[in-house]
Amino acid sequence: MLQARSIQLARCRDQKFGSGMVATGCESETVLGLGRGRQSKAAGLRPRSPWCDLYHFLAFSFLLLALTLAGGVSVAWADAGAPPAKTISASPAAGDKAEEALKKLPAVSDGVHLDDGGAHATLSFDLSHPVDASAFVLTHPDRVVVDLPEVAFRIDPEAGNAAPVHRRGRRHSHSHATGFSGLIHSFRFGLFAAGKSRIVINIAGPVRIIRAAAEPAAGDGKTKLVIELAKTDKASFEAAAHKAVLQAATEPEPKPADLSSADAAGNLPVVVVDPGHGGIDSGAIVNGLLEKNIVLAFGKELAAKLRATGRYKVVMTRDSDVFVPLGGRVRIARDAHAALFVSIHADTLASATSVSGATIYTMSEHASDAEAARTAEKENQSDATAGVEGKSQPSRRVSDILLDLTRQETRAYSHVFARTLANYWKVAGRLNKNPERSAGFIVLTAPDVPSVLLELGYLSNVKDAKSLVSPEWRDATTSKVVAAVNAFFDSRGVTAAHPIPPGSIPAAAATLDAAATGSVK
Image (cartoon, rainbow, N blue to C red; front, side, top):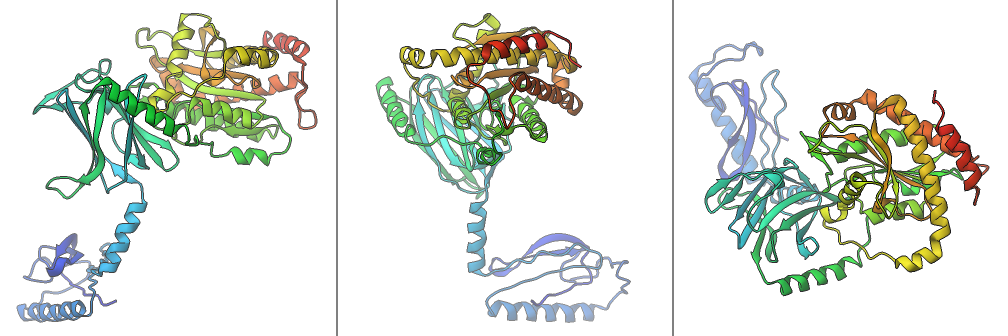
């Protein structure tokens, strides 16, 4: 490849030529040696005469013309000690290939705009390149869901709750608590599954989707994803939502990344680690701290330590920032024939910032107290947050008849592990004043898998928030969770050679209850 070199180039910039060609070069004050400019001391060059400059310019122009006639141009400039120059081909085929390669990469979105007039609203996202989009509506609550290929959203996760809004030419700010005051109440965005992103828009009333598509932005040549909504009647909205539900029922749910790896671990008991929320569902957000990130870091470290014992198969419901439905998490545990399920979360309570410490929850149709009921209601909204329609549950009457004995035994083991975990946790971390509670958490409904939900602490409490992001705290507390898991299985005599014995709850529970009330070293 022919290259031209200019001795007067010292700083880099793009230079445009005819036919749309661009060369990136480094210069001092002039381009292509036109004029004297400053000389490069690093190159040890001496001043030249104007005739020399003219000679080099004519020679360079001749080379440029010859290469253009040959069908392609590559120009690179560099001075001594300067960074390597870019090489850009003017070949149409190469340009098409570059455009195709760009489309295969996740699009990047770094801006969002809302224009809401109350009866008509347009929500648009800036994109690095076009993507395909499909949209549908859901009820209970009323939502608009937009599915996309994977998009890297470089936008404040709270933008859809408290960002300024453009409305009829004026700017309005709305609080996080109340959301926006027009047709769109709030919106959120994020990764929904591997290779798939989603935008969920909470709406103030029935709407119809006018369009949801990527299109060129006016004037600047960029791309925008435009979601345009308008008010409609309730009957039309509900009919559209019913159609979407029927279609969604045929789609498979996300699977965990490492479920297959657990199958190769022999006959070891399976422990499922379930970092809550993820992807489009951020969970609690306080002062820039995202629950989904905190619990994922905790879950990864816990899983690694459990694997390091050599005593367990470990399955994570998610090991990246993706969303997994609540029912999908339960199915993961059951499909893996799990012997223990630990769901990890972090709470927030803005009205009582003094409340702190970890809490361990077990499953119960009736909440142990009002706080447990509040927490379960909040965690059970995860599917709605991500735009997932809740799947119908089996009849309680049939379920009770078929699974009552198994459920009772399973819940007894769940309570035993919760008590053990609380006892070990208090050595390394703070416990809530009422650390063992129960409520109707959907994620704890596996009838044959002992399950607990561990709330690590409160993001709304200053001390807890500091601990939750501390590597030292995470190391200490995950180690105690591993110790509690070991004690739980030790009390049941569970090893690779001796799987979990059926119907052994009375003796095992008594043994472990005694251990849990003693001191832990």
